[in-house]
Length: 484
Image (tube, rainbow, N blue to C red; front, side, top):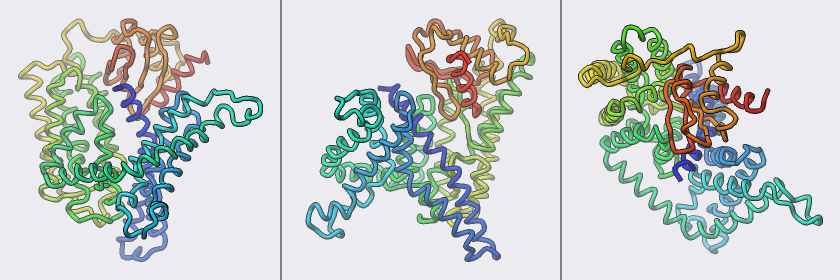
């Protein structure tokens, strides 16, 4: 079950990856519209409409991305089936359709059916489509119906199943919707404390990859909060909309880079050069783009106590920003790029104060991390006992091999090669691998490539944190597996 949920979380990253495009379009459009020369500009309206078209259709994108990501061979027909599933259920359960089915006016229909095109329905549609694809994509029908065999059969059975599911949701959706709204309302009533609790659990779930499920409640229109959509569409409340995003900026732009500096300064002198390169790259990625996994995975397993402290500080940051109603938003993650784009938006409330808060958190992170590491002799990267350093000589690579190709070859060898590796996949920063025997995995050899961390999920599943170039490493590994 845990493995399936992790695969679901990974699949969600594909549609979420389009949000930076929406953020750029909306941010640039809002910036142009906010300038004296751009007031009433058709260019600004054009860009904002284009960005809104992505944000407003995230449910559809989720259906496509989840169906593709959970299908066994990532085939496009699975994504097509996800589209079919989403269209069937959202049209059958739309306000107009339900009004016609129940013989009543649209204004008398339960409000739940007015928000059926949500990311939640998109995820359900994608899951159903992937199950249908994995089950029926290789089914052969009798000769008379041979044209509809295999992958052509998948959208048909998907549509048929969604008819049944739509019938069930006709009765269940109002209760589901009410429950989600109640949960969101409960969090909202906790005011800044609720924002803090969300930030804390958001970071705690990072190692499992299940933080995306929690994020969907607050960032998207699953429980009526829709923090990202409302912020970028300027349809929320000033000082309130964006509270589930704003507090991440001080952490990702300042806190974590300061933690990286503390880890570097407390490393053994003989390892500072190696650790410095790692921390510089990871810290810069967190500051610029908000991608924090390379840095967090560098210490979350070797120093879990530090990671809990980091999670608590993240919660504190969100609570403080929410308390003072300082807001800014992101389309992808809380890095400098998104901060700049969100700055001119109407719902950005005193966003410069987040920079001041960030500087304060940088000081807290640096001195607290440095104190805890030294006081409790925590074995953060570069503080391993003498004799446990990685032997880089094991990384024997042919001359002329690319750096990424070399890394891929060493990782694959450390995983046990063809005899042990069953499947290879990746998310934004991690290789996600399935192996026959975890005992055959040589973690020291994998770490010799300089990867930030390794996470053994189960007896047959392992994750290797590579960073933002993970896709290219995964591609190189696939080439090795295919003998290219």
